Length: 369
Image (cartoon, rainbow, N blue to C red; front, side):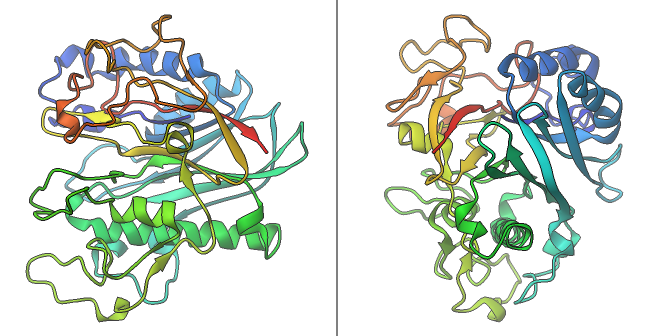
């Protein structure tokens, strides 16, 4: 499961004016969030925008009582963003997994060659949590990882470089603790908010010209194809903001996943990603993913998204008629094969009285091969 909870300081920050204020308070949202987490009973839980006191005082003890162990990596912004630190949290069920090694890091703390592109990468405090687990039933090892990439669409190159550093750290972590073949041989589950779409079909100020069939974001292309060529507009050699010069350090150098092979679990199951996992009054898109190493897993079921392509009516999560998960291969319920603009999907801006966050959760049932 992966779920961006919407940190309380952002819910109170004035960005969700479309939502009645009584539905934005943490007291109002807490029980709905906990119910969402508990209802899926996932063995691995990846959470984003978890405030430090929420992790220590609420989530960690609440999930510990239900048989989970958790790890937390906070981030704190500058003076322009007030409030407590928030970050990512990774939980796993202790009756299913034993922990062998754990590593948490900020992307800007990792030495890179070439050096990181521009100053923005160094300013950011996003990072990831890695946990090398051993599946108790099969005795097999598994890498679980949780992350949250930079939000700003003007810095798609920074996001792509963050994803490169993430994969490099995952590969190095596996090599150190398992062996040189581990990046390709150890199953990987990576959940998070990647702030990157699978395919953009509607031009905007950041990408005013798009191919006829749309364009995958640099992050998504990198993670699902294993490399990102310098010709891609989100590559550090190509993406420039007004007044910036070309980044000569990256000319001719593709970004890579360091041998980590990944696919979106919803694509493995259904051939496509959902049209949206977040919806506000001015944006809709799929930003959240559960990536898996496809050679190691069968995707047995996926959590359906709460919009119905047949009737156009919203179906609240937990509706028994939805059953909680879609089965096997084929078209996922709630997907729109022909949708061009996710804003056209008949689903209201969130949070609201039903959905406690501005993101939807994703969950999958995986079978180890």
